[in-house]
Length: 180
Image (tube, rainbow, N blue to C red; front, side, top):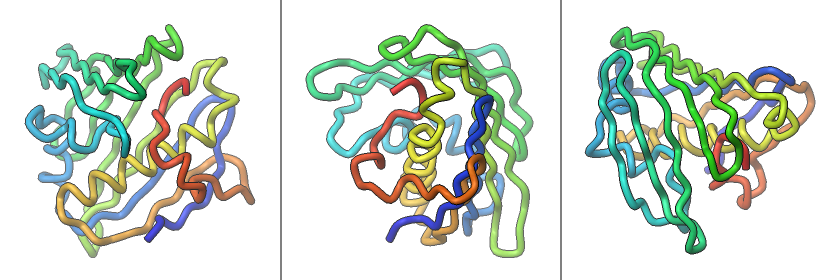
């Protein structure tokens, strides 16, 4: 079952919101758990996870490498804000597609049914034209996270351009969230 989407990407950022049945603490911890990150973060359906390394502390770094169609795709960055269980901020760079360094902010708030996670990625000028694809990529990643933690809640909202509903094409579901 596909997530329900409302797309409104802007030229400067993409925001995706998803509800989870999980409480904020385990949801937050999933973003910093090196032993499970490779199962859902930047993982594509046909890719092979090669390496996951994270130093989950303020100023620490992460590197996630997946082999896609015989080529290794590196996602890397550093942690700029860690406030368990409500806020995580990290940089994101995917050198294969762009040298730009973008910022991803995650806000998790308790809700009646568990948690609501809002992810916002700032976009470089070169990535802005791919805002809808990036939003669809993050939606797929959040769906994979939900599957990883055993969550069956399926409500996502992308913000940016009204009237568009990206991510309904199965081809987009494995798209990397930055630069391609």
